[in-house]
Length: 475
Image (cartoon, rainbow, N blue to C red; front, side, top):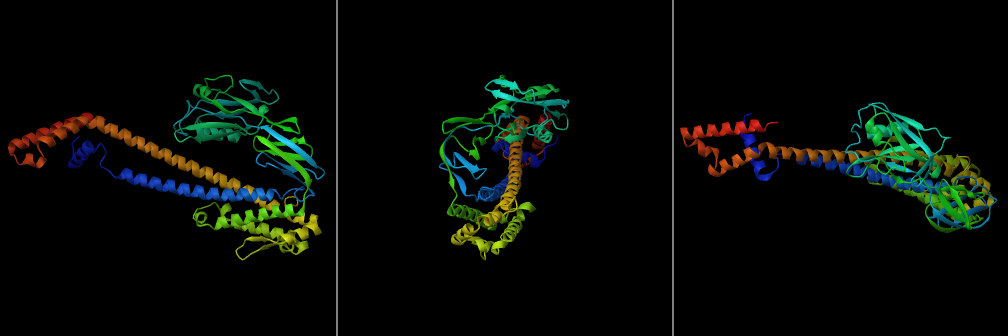
């Protein structure tokens, strides 16, 4: 292999700097940084939209259902610990609630892989079995009434991504996801339902590699799958009476009341009158959440993002819900008849006095404007927000995965560059030393050429030596 002048120049630069004589890597890094910045901008915009939708959904939910405008209401002294909804309007009283522990769904995580698309095993047909039962510490008792669920893994899906997709498509009661910790990828399995009776084990039969990689029993501490969250029931006391539930939504503690547990702690629940001013405050919270979402959609950061059509059409859906609310309020002559008007900017305004007057005159009619078997003002907005939250969540996950893949790809490129540099060290070490020696004793090749016939012979000998060494170094 002959060495050109350009190769010799690059070799000398590499000898002196330890770096290849190219700017391509820097240009690629710049492009990657631009893509990463774009992902970050889009994720941030979606995050802001999701937060606004979440607040709108929460405020709308407070005005939905048969008890939202009832004459009785449940109030918590500490909503961050527990909140409550009435399932009928005949409950009253005061209740001391102590949340001892929250319900958890079991979660398992496999050992790490460098890529979510690396092949695992030979592709031999393998059956992954999911067995549900009662899990307590290192003891597991299978529920014989629940047949083990099966998932097939073969050459079509023997990667982390493939296994996750296969498990989710099989609908076996477990949700699978590929996670990335910044360095490597793992496969995560989470039970769809919380509670000790929804613990589960994994077993694989077929490919030897997958048998070891996808097997989990709580008593085995040396396996490739570890339990990061144990299945657990919620435990609480209501007026000193201990109650257990498989979910953090508890319906068996107080008759006619649904408790939603949020954290460990204490709270007092008061079930009593639902005065007009309290309902008006909830309507005000709903209108504020609506206006906040409107303002968020007008921000430049959101407008610059290419949202899916369903998100871009959000304003249309909001307007349709407003029109439906106006029709539902026909007995009052529209929303303005109950104190709700729209200004020139499209924001809603609440006349609290007018609203409370309408509520006092005909509570049932006002109730139907907001909640009426899914067709009310609040019902529609709660449903729209719920659906759009799912869309935004999927987009955030997609963008996050793309950003992580880009980061992993760049990391892989950097590793490749490092390996290439090491290859230069190994392949051209002798040549580098020789070129340095030539450069030290004879400053330039032009100097040698001026020395006549003897110098030409010396140059020829030198180039032959260089070429011989280069041939030896070529992989």
